Image (cartoon, rainbow, N blue to C red; front, side, top):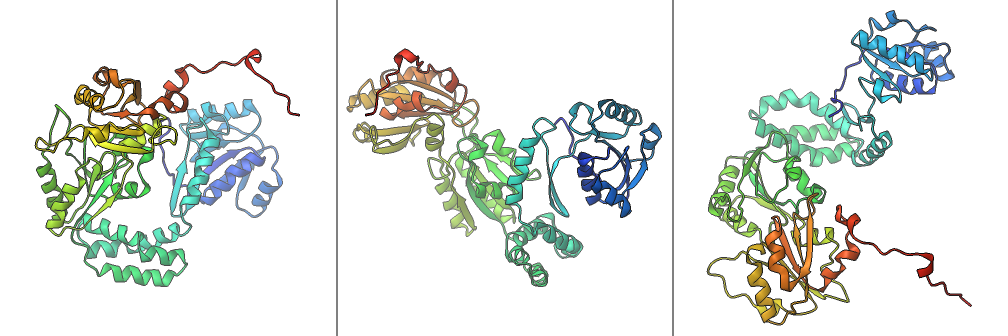
Length: 476
């Protein structure tokens, strides 16, 4: 972080603003919203600042700046078009160890004004550290649209009830679950409709209810890119008491889990660390029976080669409530980022997903079905058996020249796509970092044309056109 985010209490604290124009007026208005005691130094004031002086809302202390004006103030803002004066203000403030902001001069700012979303007492500040203020403003506009106007009233009422809730509900888990249920339920809807008194009665009614008993949410984390996590999945991991995650969940997604939630690794890696599935199943049940809100976070989609169904069967047998949040499976995410459509009218009318990792007593694979033409075959966890897969597909009719792709670490910054044919699939797979996905079919040939993600896009050879190579036709 270039700047440490701090919300300062300026209530009745003196703040010096040097400057009397439009820019100074904007900063003064922000400071007045925080109830600061604003002192102005300027040769002259514009009409807006003059009116504020006449209303006794700000104090015009001097026309000329001198160092003593900085001595007893909390913050200093320089907002003039005189670079020498701004430099003087900055140096004096720094020497007195005062926080100072020289407007539009990042090098002379020990604090900065962020873009603010105000739902007092809820406040959200967005900053680019001075690098891209327009981008910060655009982000603020998006957040303004997402955050309802009644958030401030909700926070104000909740604050007045915190002590009573703490007396009624003795544990942190109980209180957290109570507030989460309240903020996502009828209480919130009543406040949205400006039915304040009815909302207060709803809060009191909900406080008498019993919030014991845990639950499990099975959440698909997607293939890696944190941006592909669903909104509902994000809500679940930010409300969880415990998150059980596997090896395919990216670090970027784990960073989105609520900070005080317990993280437990229950992953499996080929030829690596193993956590028995039965152990994971029982742990989910045990944690839920302790009254905790549990999230089982699985890479991709929990019902696509994720054994999510097996985990839920154990919960159902013990009467533990559960829910499922689907995720984007690797076959959809990784191929999309590689510019490989799973279906295309000219190349493939169907797509088949299979896994290369199977139970020892599993029935024989129907290679004849998998080797059909005009079909895209996507193989999860197949790199270790790539040679057998390639040989079997060719034996059952797939041409050795069929295009194939091996996509490693799909949708992440490190995604790498190798293109070849069925004939050399084993060589590609041997070099591929894991996790990796194998794609077999004519749609792979579109990769070079449609690739859009990552550095590879810019290193591929592109057609070069000259005026001589263009044919111009006259339209009669």
